[in-house]
Image (tube, one colour):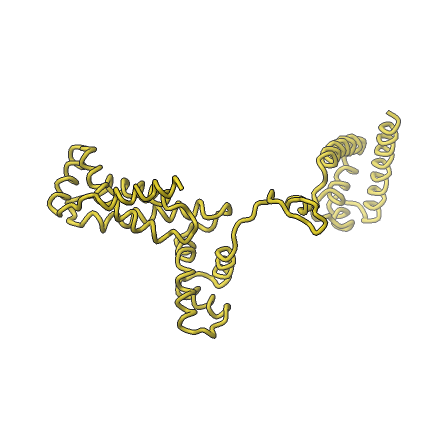
Length: 286
């Protein structure tokens, strides 16, 4: 109730602000730009607060408080006042409209949902025009299917049909808290969070896997240290490389037969196995 009263008071104050004649507006704008007269800037801003209120009302269907929308619009209005160039002979209201709308739209996109949507110009146009275009198409053709409607909107706004479909689903639903209580038929109370499952390992399993992985790495490094240079070269090329070399390729590289390469490889694997078995046995009895 207090918020509603404050909103009404703010709107009444905005609507009661006096209009500025073109000459007065130009004089105040020059006073601000040339002399940094804060009072001149504030007078320009207050005289156009009704423009902020009017534009804020167009965004009320997004479920955000009018007072917050007006405040964001006022920020845009002050930005416009700070950047306004009176020598261009453009009315301030025309120039300020873009800044006010941009400020309000940015606020709506940031606060309408906890899930951030696209921030490109095409995505913004889709977000703010989807409902209007959908209503217009529905009035023009009551038998238009949802898919056909999405295709027409996509063509009109220059986005993909998939983007329209996704945005339509978002605008048709609201955010749900994972902590919101759910009552079962048996009278038990729980939350949506209780029904979420994860395939990820438990924290203790993750810690155990990390420790075991590091231990196996040290064991393998120690085992590889028992190989001679040729054995190491073959094991690296055959077992540790992403694309393992063939016996024939290694035979040509080392100047031996592929059968000899196979024998050396088997001997190296036996060495590695013996070292790793001893390591695991020592660890088991440690």
